[in-house]
Length: 205
Image (cartoon, rainbow, N blue to C red; front, side, top):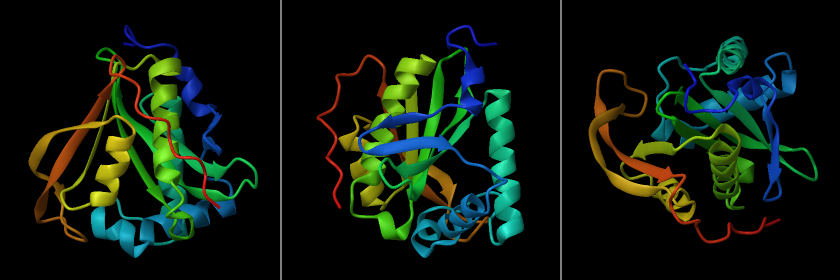
């Protein structure tokens, strides 16, 4: 049921441009995309704060992971964007709208940035861009994100983009490289009716 959302068929082909970035679907048939996905998921800083249920440890697993995301977009349940520099086309990271609940017009957001692209406001610009698109094009009412307590960088990104911290969720995510132990997470959310945040930072070279 999609009573409160617009046409979700756009998820599989959506492209969003702005803030010096271009967001486009990941391509499991692209060797470059598979390599970038693998690098992002095996990066030590990513692994410090994220423990995926299905780990991506080699190229085959990376390709399978991207195929799953393509299928979810076709189903209308999620969309995974590669973040690219709008001028050079260089892949900078990932941002996705996940767990779309159409009747409630609610979804969750997740993102990461490749090591060489950090310190340039990429995550902030991408989150601002995808939030505007989610509220505008998809018609979402509420967008949520969470991060492990202690991940101050992610916390600042969320708050700069108008995602207020709503509280601490106890034992909500796995500890680093563990699937038998948990840690707390901060829940952030932004509503379509919230005041617009301050302008996002301009791209830095």
